Image 1 (tube, rainbow, N blue to C red):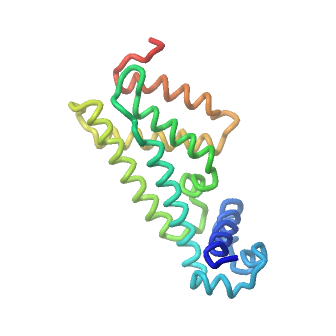
Image 2: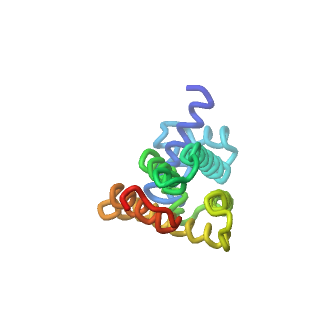
Length: 195
């Protein structure tokens, strides 16, 4: 196995442990045992355990960022048939379904997380709120307070995405999508196709 492939394997195993049991469970002995390697290889490739955990956070943040960028790509002009913010929510929901462990790390940060995780969360919140603010202004150039509106939409979207992961039997994909699709026209003041 190449050094890069081994590095990815160690990150994958660390992520699986963190996802199942939290950061405290990702000890060098546990990771090495599950990877079938000597603990010294972890130090060789990452320097130390905190650096390994930061590498994991950075990798997953990069993955989630790319998935978010894909979800908001080419949203198009708003109309009764095309609600850009609703489409963006659908895209993020699809990314969460396809990459649950990546998104769970950020939607439900495990206890004992390094401070870098909280830094990445604050950065991503700022980026998403800025995206929402700019989309709101594109849709409603005269919107009274786009900053607070973006924050409310962010908090609401976060709650719905967390519900999908914490209570998937109740917060089904169909229920969440229907809710957001019906709410979208009410928020935007535009008639939906069903109205």
